[in-house]
Length: 117
Image (cartoon, rainbow, N blue to C red; front, top):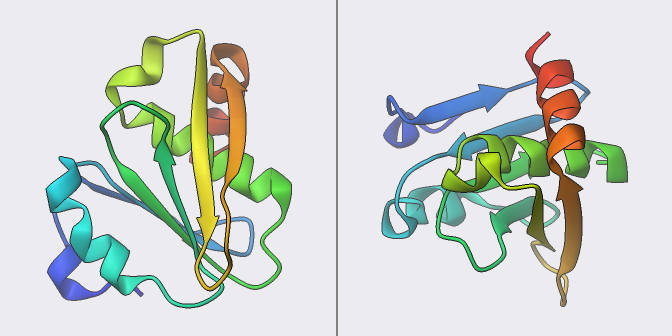
């Protein structure tokens, strides 16, 4: 369940695939409430070198495919949605390091379409 203080016209929630994905598509400083909701084991995603939305993924056994879907949704709600290739940074709360996902425009379209069904 999304905390009430995150409700916004800019919020997009996706709850399929056995996990929850919250995209909060506002300026970086307005994404902080989403970041503060993150718990150990959750994943936070943002675009590499491009300001835009933050995405929080919560669920048990979140797969690499699920993170690619979340990455595509992050791109979809950003100014980078028309770029041919986008890098998305993924950090799991409670762990060191960051993972980088490379997503191409065609894959982003397919993943977003699948998430919207």
